[in-house]
Picture 1 (cartoon, rainbow, N blue to C red):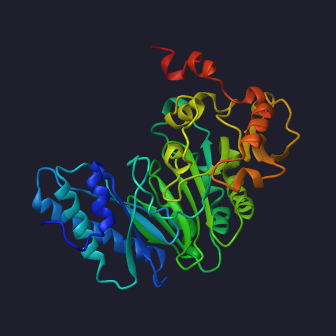
Picture 2 (picture 1 turned 90 degrees about the horizontal axis):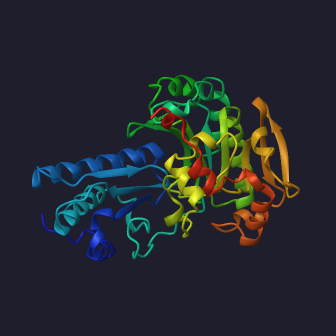
Length: 381
């Protein structure tokens, strides 16, 4: 199938830059007429139609799409594997647009992720998104396969539900690329019917303007990611909401921290393309898991808010610019007394960050410690 005029001209231009298989498409419910799960199901069906057409055209190496659920009021669709030709990439995109074109409320707009296309122009204005990352306690040797501590779900189900819900939002969860809407009364039962190692993303989203969304991802690597998007509130107000969510996981966390992150799907690798800067060696080590065994005593970077242990605090120099709040299970919330310069932009004020680094002192892991501390699984090699 030749590239059709249905594909927006911007997508043709992006494909022509040479990394065509990485082009993402933002799909929005422009009129706010759909629930969040209806929107996602519609996009899943459209991606399935494009995939089936691609298999018919190129059985040996078909194009294949993936849906990212994380954006408030919209979702991202990406070609998740390299295809053989520019023509094939455009043909897949054309099938996708064809599948979506019968719904008047839908708009298809291009969004080029700088992480994937370094020279691409960002054609989509992402909503501000604060995210909390928590590394949950588990055996470091089994972290790559181990699920989260069971108490995160079994003991905090009501707290998670109450934190996620807000007026006008649909409560849904995503598992194995399937979207399920959850009635509030059924939320505990639905949440607990899951395989132990199966990642689960629970979110509440209001598809109408302003964009609003809260989400919690609990993954199989003993990680939890929380996110708050609300364009009607200030970043400081959103931070307060996010911290309440982070506290829910705090009793099981070796380490938790807050920063701006990708509104699509926050993860530890999103720094270069969302924060428009290169990660520090410590942040790279955290994202790759090379300092998992050190997280009970060290942090990778200073943050506007962190969940820490007494072992962390013993390494700090002077936390006079931070509130220190005791939490259950021997955890502490360390939060900046003035959070505004931390969250008003995607990166904190450089002077504020440097002052915090000095205050955190030996709590921030050094490159030397990373290089010289042997990971537990390597000790018997």
